[in-house]
Length: 405
Image (cartoon, rainbow, N blue to C red; front, side, top):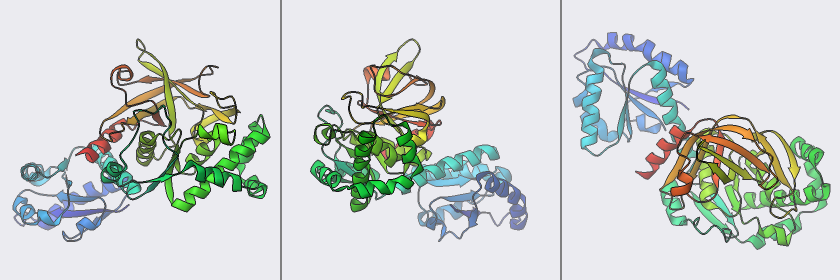
């Protein structure tokens, strides 16, 4: 994504010399970012999703004051500190704060500035990715999610996400319409053929894939970017589970959560938009206060998130097809947005171990948390929490702070 940049240089300075002095600085940042700066006039700068104001010298504060209303906040003031540019940036940012406007000075080493611009760019891209998308709530939230109901008007107002309620009966009808010929078309899909190689019961797997196809039909019908499903209703109606279907949909970029858990779905969407990583929705199963660790488990996980997996039955019911996936040990992020869409919890974590207990949902990981594990005991954000590989906690914090202001 090209980045717009508008330069402020005082005519008191030798403009050509200042431009020559700063060319190498800007070029190095471009190379670090692998993004292009597009030099703009002030009237076109706001056409770019990310726009920078390059304060190249002192004495430009008056110019900025005359033109700042042509620009959009937040104002990102880039400066290398030469020619009194940092001092001018301080005066400009103070002026913006006095007007109640948001801004930031981008100053320091080239590596720091590049990293900061990269973070800002990621947040802008995430907001654009979420803006105006449709998510489907198929069936009501599960009865046990007594603290996980979301006001859909608030969801649209805060995140520009549209919630569409879809009756579970519509899904059941779609499942019944899936014929064997449609299932046969999946034989060319290597990932699904690999599932058959791991299958303990081909009939159960084929029925699970009917759910997958039916959900894809609903995704296409309502133009969904994500969905959540009251999946336990499938146990008594089609005698199978949505675990495989949700795993495959997540691999395809259709962010999908279990049990009709809307806050979990929105949390998954945010984490995926910021990280571009698949997201695992899991139950915290137990914590170790002394070690600051938590065990998380669930019967589905995106296959693209696993280094290996085997298929098993769904834990609670003992029927259908669940996934016991192994997730690569190492740095990760744990996140959950509360149902009020304001409070949230995020922590950098380290995945320490994949576990194999018989009394937990199939995919199980033990993680060490950077934040205090007592959070779960004193101020939890509900049951399910979301995990992606890589450390994005600081980025999640900044994204959420920008959305809550």
